[in-house]
Image (cartoon, rainbow, N blue to C red; front, side, top):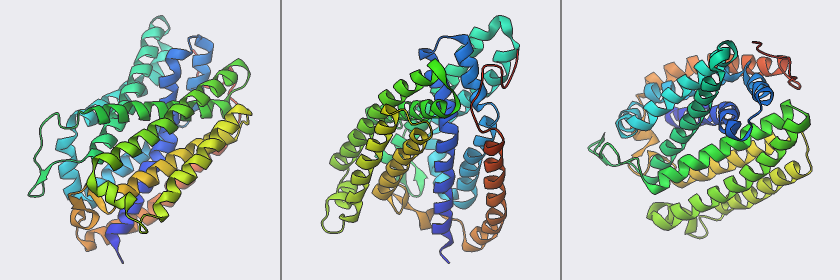
Length: 333
């Protein structure tokens, strides 16, 4: 068995699950500046209150799995991305604390709203910066990071950070479409359309930049006929993006979130195809970064046991808290 490849797929699934689930509750904080009404903000937070902390399970699984399964990649990525990683963790802490304190600290609720906004934006932006830094390449010499403290900072990584914020805003708006009604839902449709258009444009721009700037990516996408299958990715993205915008325009409650996940999935597949089989493009491959096979096999036993349990309790939580969120549901002051 190719344990390294199996674990690469499991880590990729964990990362996508985190984006799909924690993305919409980070999106709540990103949308906060455009929604001033306190009652609406309370409903937004209440719509994710039962699930937000469970959603972060996937972040722990992805990060912990990377350390255990691909220690070489972890040892390179961490020193290269210390600052955005620390910023992301601080943002998540602020966001988590604000969830609880904004409902209890009545006199300072506006400050906790700001902490919720700032924490969500910083966490989302930092994740985008890390994605951009990986795609543009990380300097490696003798299997160790050899770049500087600020090598992660570039116009492309800033663009990637802003794009992830837009994408999470789309997920947040699509979630609100499902979980709310009335004027708040109508505004969610509008924010979803705007952020959906911006996200699709951002994905297209990032794709053009990578192909035009990096020879390895260009060879992967422009060598015919080997790249024929890859050109299905932008074609499918156009179809899924059209479905997303149509569902938001027609105000279909259950579909925008699924279409939004489709946009993220297609982008995930496209960017993954651009760098495969490298974990550190184009320096360290999956197999070079992997731990010994006996360690991978031992860890896989635990994953086979734990992953179904995680999926089961996550699904059960969403089933129990299904339906619309009213103004008097969830946390109370």
